[in-house]
Amino acid sequence: MISLKRTDSDDIDFKKLVVLLDQDLKIRDGEDHLFYNQFNKTDKIKHVIVFYENDIAVGCGAFREKESDTVEIKRMYVHPDHRKKGIASQVLKALELWAAEIKYPYTVLETGKKQPEAIALYQKSGYSIIPNYPPYEKMDNSVCMKKTL
Image (cartoon, rainbow, N blue to C red; front, side):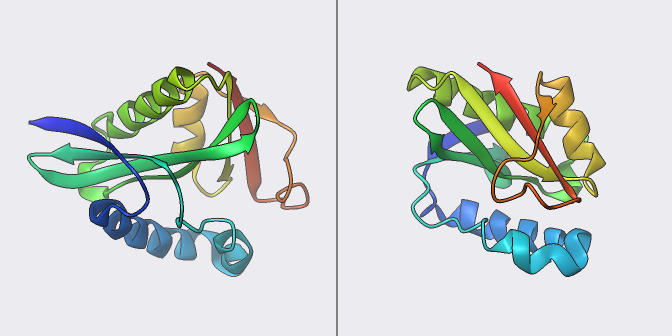
């Protein structure tokens, strides 16, 4: 059985998944990890989705306001044992639906060139590559994307 839960960054399951995400990103980002990590704080995020499979939290994602008409997708993660099942797509769609419900017409996100599976997910989901926005504008590893909801 699968389910999705709307919650916030105080959720214990979300926090556990973010620890795993940060471990993965530390390896992928290498020397750039300290730069990226400073923008990945999860305190005070009001919009979090946690994906459960058989009552076990296996995926998550979040968004926060970037501008008055735009939210930034953050902290997307699926446990490696549960990948290739469409979980990330479901989490992303749930985040987009929630953002649209509260009247945000745009989503943006930043991901890394060393995360080709994430880039493919976002492109498949209708995101277009845009010029890197601050604070990523000088980061060669960053790929910024946008979607109209």
